[in-house]
Amino acid sequence: MNASSLPRRRARIAVAALAVPLAVAALSGCQRSAQGSAPAPVAPVASTPAAAASSPATASPAATAGSGAAAAAAKAAAASALSAAVKQASSAAGTVGSDLSGASSAPEGDPTQ
Amino acid sequence: MTPTSVRRRVTVVAVSLGAAALLAAGVSAPAYAATVARTCTASALAAAKTAVGASVSHRDSVLSALSGHLDVRPHLTSSHRTTLAGLYSADQVGLAQVLARVQADTTCAAASTDAQHIVTDYRVYLLVVPQSGLTLAGDVGTYGAQTLTAAEPAVRLAIKLLPSSSTKEQAQTLYDDMAAQTSAALGDFAGVGDAMLALTPASYPGSSATLKAQAARVASGAKSLAAAGSDASQLAALLD
Image (cartoon, rainbow over all chains, first blue to last red; front, side):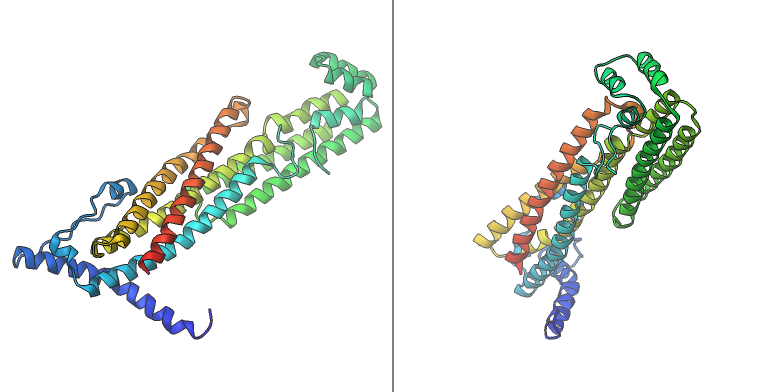
């Protein structure tokens, strides 16, 4: 990473750190305005891949009409989270391939033993 | 030296080609031992002991290398790490004990019989190596899939907030596939380490089917993980 990219990276990290709370706050605000003054809890996020896959990706009309800033923040947070996850997952996938290969061929050993 | 069958090596070194031919032809163990007893000489016994020492030494180096792999696999579970480290250590101690017995043997037949324990009691190449590799692969693969799972809430939120558009539809499609592939990978990797570490040298050759089945699961999990990673990469670009 060169020196000129550092400020951009720091700014991106800062945006990512703030993005989820901002987006959640925006969603909560939308729901509050739609339902009155009582705080409406944000629907819990499914914690498993299966649950996530089955969760309808439908928000209330108020939520989907959330501010452009919240949407941008959420996009930045998601992109940042995904980028980090992709790096980890890619590294893990490479390691899995290496270990799988090693498991099927003993180095210099007789596999019948 | 490249180790081959300990028994074959002992045979070649310690007895005549005729005896080796008998063994290869399926002559019974007692008949083989009798042949060895007739043909064994002091120099042949010494050579056999040297060959056995080399076989143990190579296994010892393989076990040390496997032990070294544990240091560079931070995502191995602590339970599996402990079990594998204990396995390597116990095998190295046991192999050293077998070697000591062989070195103390006074006949080629006794040396040959003891040397077979190097194979049958440890199965370093046939069992320990794949046990290690597949356990590591299962745990690392689980970690990799979990990192994608951890990113899912943020992605779902971002997609929710996208205005209706082809981009939103594309993102939803990619997300659905990523979640499905990640789930499939987690399913494939789950339990691989436990299944592998439950195998013992005594379970051979019946354990071969388990080895193949678990290797197939890891291969399938790796494929799903790669697909999920590709989806995630495209999603990141779409949302960036």
